[in-house]
Amino acid sequence: MRGISTIVAILILIVIIAVAAILVYGWTVGLMATMGREAQSETKPFSVCLRIVAAQKVWEGVDGVSYEIWLMNCGDSTLHLDYVYVLAPDGTVVHSYYAGDWPVSPGSTEYLWLWIPKSAVESGKRYLVKVVTREGAEAYTTIKVVYSS
Image 1 (tube, rainbow, N blue to C red):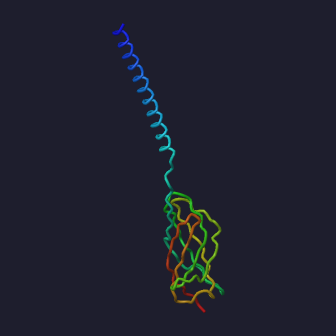
Image 2: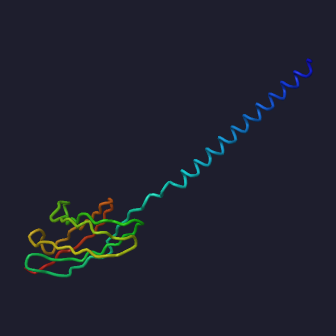
């Protein structure tokens, strides 16, 4: 009888070890599948990039001068223009306006019409133009304001 109970005990231990191994294997495979799905569902953050490619004076009126500011969205998400600032050399804002939340698609180049009142700037001086988007992108260019009195 002693020999049979030893064999039964060994068989029970083998069954317990096999069941434990199957449970650990199933848990590991399920965990790996969950981690794989989470990794696939993570989205790549969008790159936000705005560049001013050109600026030129296009019109002069009695009260102000106008410029075309050519903007390129060099990122991979649509940008929405927020504000345009004209800054003096010392950094003070001499003119600003809301750009109307105008969308600029990825890869596109579009122009913005910038009207500056003559009362805000001096002819012959350089000013910094800063364009800001709702997404946080900023672009800068320098213009020399020249107008007839």
